Image 1 (cartoon, rainbow, N blue to C red):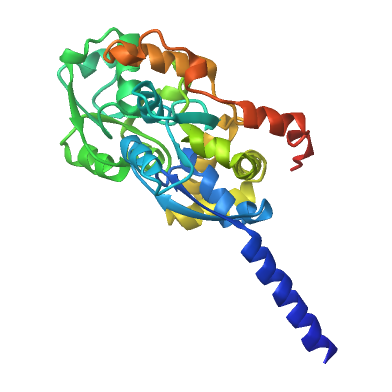
Image 2 (cartoon, rainbow, N blue to C red):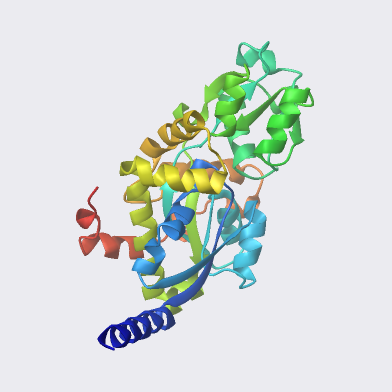
Length: 323
């Protein structure tokens, strides 16, 4: 009888906690390692720890992510800085509030017979889409290599698995890939011409962005989301075992070599605290200003709000994170 009473009390407490959790919907852009922060927070129940009942939906492409956020299908969005910057410049109330990954997260991979950037002239290069981070990375790489865009053919080639297949069958000569697809390409003999994360260009690849109106009305909820997000970054940087379990599940991989290579590639590059890289935003604004008049002369403060993250840091949250 005592056991039954105790069980009922436990169930009531659990039900009350579930009822008290704040419901949110957040997106993520795919299943590469740099996109892992939110699904690590979900799968390791970190969102629940901070009182959030979080549903995650995969939305590929920044423009779709922004459209879902503006339409109310999601409350928080994650992805590269490109789409939210352009949306904000064009009058939407979107603002970037954090960033867990402030480097280009992929390498430039070519067919084996291409040995140097100068040999890219006249070749076909596959990217995810125009206007996104692949496009920006390509433009910056070509500029650094002294190659004009009209000297190559740029093809919208779909997601990473599709572009890897296109590379292997000869439809394209080069593309951007991140682990695990990068690891598979390298093992198959394709050439890693450049690691974009080590080039001069800066970029905020994995950011969190919200509507300013939602931030005003739900500031405490956003704060709890950022705590969960930051703790997930901490785990990614310090806990290989738990991170690999999530990677294996989400990426549907059982190859330990590929999984460990993926972790080793991404883990050291995550940003903690997850602040937006100022140089990366400025580089992106400079890039878009050449094509979009509404971006010219705009200031960083119009697009980035670190106030919630500042508050979390003042409270000593990051000092409390332990391996």
